[in-house]
Image (cartoon, rainbow, N blue to C red; front, side):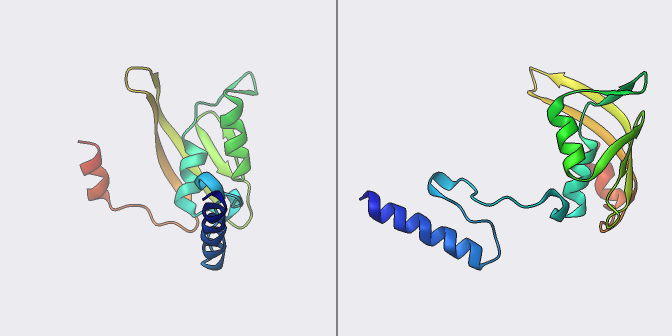
Amino acid sequence: GKAAAGKAAAGKAAAGKAAGGAGTGSGGLVSELISPLALPAPSVAVLAGCHHLMLVDGELLGDPMDKAAVGAVGWSYALEGLCVSRAPSRRGSLRLLQRFAFASSLKRSSTVVEVESLDGAAPPPQQRLRALCK
């Protein structure tokens, strides 16, 4: 019954921890969080570049969740259209080329960025990028 299910969930969590992953509790929820600074460079670039923050009269405006995500991965919105890493261990900069506002019919928003530099990540091959843009 419930006791067996609880023991199975505890066993899965222990196995996940032993394998180096985050443990899961009942219901599949993650019981341990990974530091945003420990994420792979491409994941950090997504969090740092996919937002709708903007500078207006020197003040950073936008969704508080976007501000928190950019700050949590050690990046900042430096100039209009430019995000830079503040983490000494991972240097990088992204230029925001185009933003597409949230479209309720599509249930998404999009941002096109140029990776100017990003320590720890190789840019994807140009052929692959061209194929994605068609």
